[in-house]
Amino acid sequence: MSTSDQYIYQSGFGNHFSSEALPGALPVGQNTPQVCPYGLYAEQLSGTAFTVARSSNQRTWFYRIRPSVMHRPFEPYNNESHMVGTFDTRTTEPTPTQIRWLPFDIPNTEHVDFIDGLHTIGGAGDAALKSGLAVHIYAATASMNKRAFSSSDGDFLIVPQQGRLDITTEFGPLIVAPNEIAVIQRGMRFSVALPDGPSRGYMLEVFESHFELPDLGPIGANGLANPRDFKTPTAKYEHTNDEWHIVNKYQGELFVAAQDHSPYDVVAWHGNYAPYKYDLANFAVINSVSFDHVDPSIFTVLTCKSAHPGTAVADFVIFPPRFEVQQHTFRPPYFHRNCMSEFMGLIRGEYEAKQGGFLPGGASLHSMMTPHGPDSQTVERATKRDLLPGRVADNTQSFMFESMFQLRLTKWAIENQQRDHDYYKAWQSIPVTFNPNQI
Image (cartoon, rainbow, N blue to C red; front, side, top):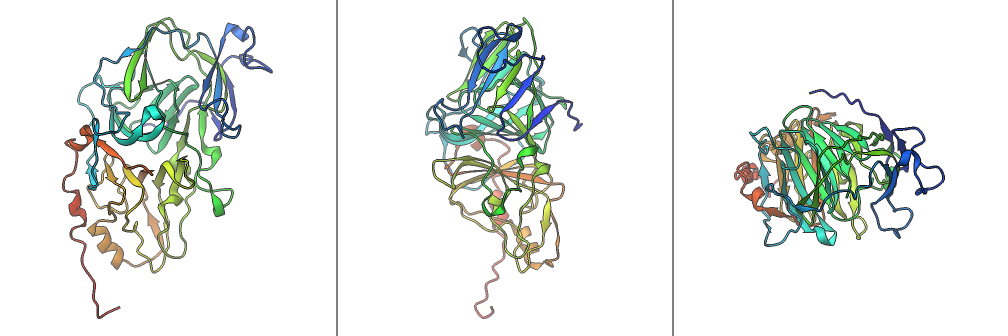
């Protein structure tokens, strides 16, 4: 698989960007002149309400060949959809059991694109109320052909596991490879091509607020994911008169509208509401250099904050390659019961707390207050090893979607043939070493 990326990007997180594919396409000194340069139309895409505080207000101005309103009416999507937007007793089931899935199957047909390869695993809340989140996986074998996708429900955080994604957006193109992520926010239209053939990955969708960098507190001004390492596309347009279909996710259901031109006819744009990508290899890891296993919040890349300070609708957390030097310490992730829900996936390699079973392309869910921790083999090794300085997680990348919400699972996820019904056995042979006569 190639890692080359031929596209040009703008650097920074949350910046006000400006980009034009033709010189002078951006109006000077105003947003909506009577006649825009090159005969373009001005169109605003709002990511927040008009009256949100200036520090949080997000919007972009497009200068495009045709207004995006030039489409025929939306109709229900005819293809079978496996997506859910309301997580209640009609659509999903709760379970406190620890759950693991072996790598999700990639379809054996050649005609499953990114949209049709999406399946909801679980979530919480209701997209119509802008409350909650959803966890999806995608498994696709074909590039999208004259189709664009967008969500009215929330922001997508996409985590490729197998195969690069060549994503065309209204803002310009971007390539996203395994060990990179992309964030495509509410209302943004995009198409996915598969340059490496059959592809698979994970997707987190948040129904409220937007992702932002976590506060660093006493860490200071630098560390974790640095703003300069985020990349936003630059303008590139298509001027066509061919048939396209716009697929819109609305309240968890899919609708489609036909139009006679490409949706990617934006010649210039400016604003701070834009898609972006990030290479996880650029994460500046913070860790204990004395003793104890520090809480995994130190590995947070992005957070979607809730109304409760310090508590997230969703955090995106990674467990990257790093040094471990703690003394007198049980070094693997500790045994835990959490007031948050933890969904984990593995991009490559072997997770440090699980020996086998948790595989690239698979996943696990540890629900709120459900016990979890390292498996028997990891415990055995960790309690007997010499605590020399060393490396951990080299050639590995696992991640976690952590949420304040209790997740409910779809029938597809609960009954999936890749579900590992023996997962509970991972902990059953942990030895009892208690001796009341010896400290």
